[in-house]
Length: 393
Image (cartoon, helix red, strand yellow):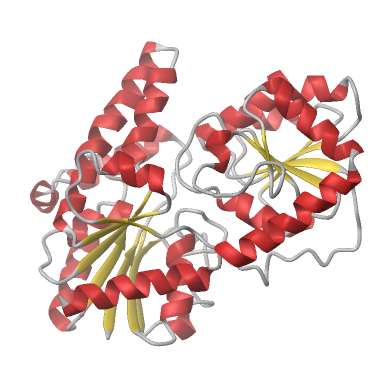
């Protein structure tokens, strides 16, 4: 069987948006012939995946650190006849050469199925062979929530325009035979206006990689994520303003903010004597040592939080809001602790700090829970079943 896989960048196990595609290649590449076409931001290495690929083609895409430069680049690419035909309005991942590359590959090769991620879906919508779009989340709903929360007029306009654009874009999924999301909540949101079959495949964890063999123990609180995104910044602000001061009144526990692209707000927190901002790290496991209390005080966002599953796999106790734990069917005070207000969140961290028996129980249960329910092998087997079904239809 021949699969054409289309991704907005080189798939990486360090990036949530491409993590399922990365594991798709590593699991299905053993039994299927996979051709990968992607943009290349030159941030990630394809060499690890090449043994699992039949062929790899890419087009380099520039990385812009300012919204202004990104908007100029996007607008220039948008003003082509090809893009008008594709109707990809203000899509950063539109490029005429990418369109030509995909069309040529489809003509030259006899693919049995196409699988594309969300940003690249419009390239495949008019190709008449079985197609799957890996949508991951209900992205327009997230943008609408950000619009309702925005305080300034400019921010409201920005988020509402994004909502309208992505809501319209998500209707592209009706041109596909199957749409995959990572949890039931996102499926329910998309089903309100998407007619195609929507299926849930939860993300997994590489439990052999995320395993805590570190004998060194250090008591600390850790938040992990891409620190350029609004949901992660909102979570840290909430924790810093509403929760951490309450903790510091009772115990002295350092707080680590681990992740790439820290915003200016996050960077200035590093001046606090008890807060450490790491920025980008080569291996997050260095900060997930025994003694760590892992937190996800999310107040916005969508999808499954891979970082929670990874922390659980590392035998760490997790304290999370309902939004953070969404899509992960674990039990409160068994595999994690739920805390939806600042007092509950503070109390949970203090309790884990003082009650070693509870901390060890939740940590051990969390590891077993992930091993039993969130392996990539199980997730990719579900995808394989969908592929086989669509090809037979």
